[in-house]
Image (cartoon, rainbow, N blue to C red; front, top):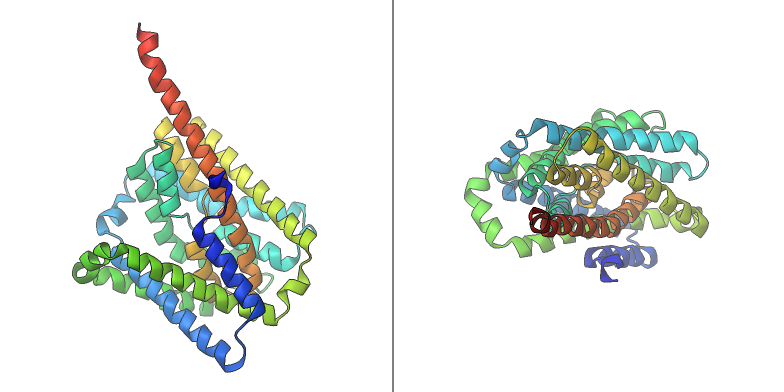
Length: 329
């Protein structure tokens, strides 16, 4: 049953949301927390740049068909499905929550969980590393463009200011980390656990800042419990559709089983670690807390579902392997 429980980071996020709900930063303290959040986000992407090897970046160019399928699922299939669900059921969710759902659809894939689940399922791990890496790198540029395209009419985001904020707060720190990797890459690798705490701390600070502002605006009075249940349903439908399409689509494209696993797990994930900093840059303080609700729910949902799916892939692979000697006899 432990695989169905929230992981420690999700529990930390929930605790941060609770803290922001009861003790939100206001006045001058809100300004200070906002600046601290921006600095922490810049540090987060700087450390990502410092730890990511150039070999992994270049590796994304290999197996173009496989990586193309993952990127198409991440940046084409997801937005199409999200936009289609909104068009089919426009009144199921409040407009702010639909904005959050569409934002989920624009995000890049995860790195750690995509690779971990691919490994558990006995898939092509090197290809998963390259696919997840390429998705995250491209997401820095593609996500703001998709947000502007999908949400431009509602005025939620987009424009030159958003692009400039992405470059200054996310892309430049990442590039700086890459440029300094020769000097600090070894140190970052040796202190990976400590830097992981810095990563999580940066995200938690951003969540506290965003939800604190949303609480001041009355977020918990805007959405009753049934509305949150409907949000869970929309996320479940979205995840189920993507998993089904990536599974059967990869088979139609003739991928080997190991590569199918990469498409399924890398193509169905959405990164909470990238989503929270992106949201704080792209959306206003009064709306960012609401926008973050769908990605927090989707993130936990994808972990639970993919944990079960990865074990089924592994069990099927073991059954085939064990059956081969018997068939030969």
